[in-house]
Image 1 (cartoon, rainbow, N blue to C red):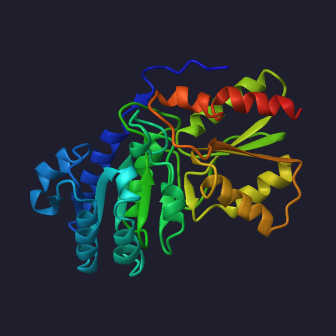
Image 2 (cartoon, one colour):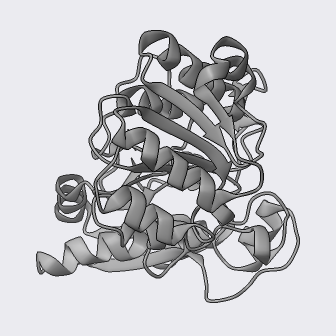
Length: 315
């Protein structure tokens, strides 16, 4: 059920983040970088622009409040942190300091979903739900380092607060060429298909592409939609997939409730779409323990095997 990926076709999301923000700092002196004692992606910017770099120490509430103050003064602050804490420990500050005045604060954070083997206290299972509930907040979950770079670049002129979730960011498969165009708020069709559509986000996009390739040999055509922006969600691509394939699967490394699955279901219900089938794959209502991400995906029923078996069951 797996494809062989060329080991040269990998990059580090952490490296991409550092390079992209440093390049934006070269382009625009309004760009600042802040972190609550998280080192990845900071070195280049800190070395080049020490007067525009702030490390607050382990104080997520403070880093958000300071960033909001900088934004009120016309700056464009980027925060690099850990998603379990950037989405929960400082949620009030994100809501009131950043979203209420609609400030251009960018939160880039790792250890999303069940990645990182940190246990339930260090898994960000609710971040897309929490951030999607905030007025003015844009929520992104890139699947690929080149896509991540484009989102960061586009965010320079993007209105309002924005969050970007990634896995630990140490080794990431490259799915797209550097020239591929991505626009915040618009999905990307990674693979065409006419029988069933998988709408995936983040780490699960690569898994969905592997499912597409598996079923090519079985004579089943699987469309893969990379929904790298969960809010605002691309309603047009969802409705088109529903009309053309009639079967929708959502796949996320996040709680199935109030994340990608719920956002897609809302679009379908709001438009009274009558589907042949609809199925969510993601984290159930549990607090997972320690383990490798792939082991946990299997344990909780949302790995590639589970999706393949489901598709087989409906054809």
